Image (cartoon, rainbow, N blue to C red; front, side):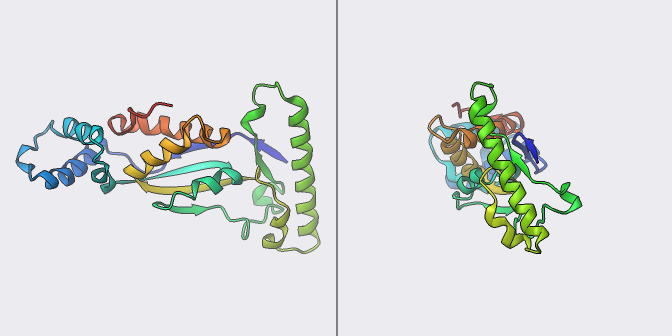
Length: 209
């Protein structure tokens, strides 16, 4: 049994200037103000349309990110319908094989990072060990992974690729990074939002949670 913490990264190659150029070009069509495009006009124009809530314009560029988290979190992620997903499959991945270290990997819940809930953490670890033991017993008995996965808990580690346009990413962060979000979902969302702010601050710096 292995435990890791979640992670998130942007997979798309980000060219901030190209993103701004495409979004400004799309937005200018709405107002037929293409004649006002200059070398430095994009930032002010895009900032203004975001403030006005004219976010359909920022749908013209999509970004792909990779998230490593537990399967419970991905159940919330995939509820965002205006996106494309590719996820590690428990039907086809046989975790008893050498390529997976012949063990299961679980995401450490953020509830236990501070060491204040050691008793509950021990109970969680015990449950994960039991799940791993039963999974490996099933595969040893000849069960294929799509049968053995029936004993896997939400905490099992998974990887998911998510591609969405910029407007949907903003919507995603507004819901999933909010204080009311599930703590594990919020942890991943804020982690990813920080990456977006580093790459294209103009489009995400107004989102504070």
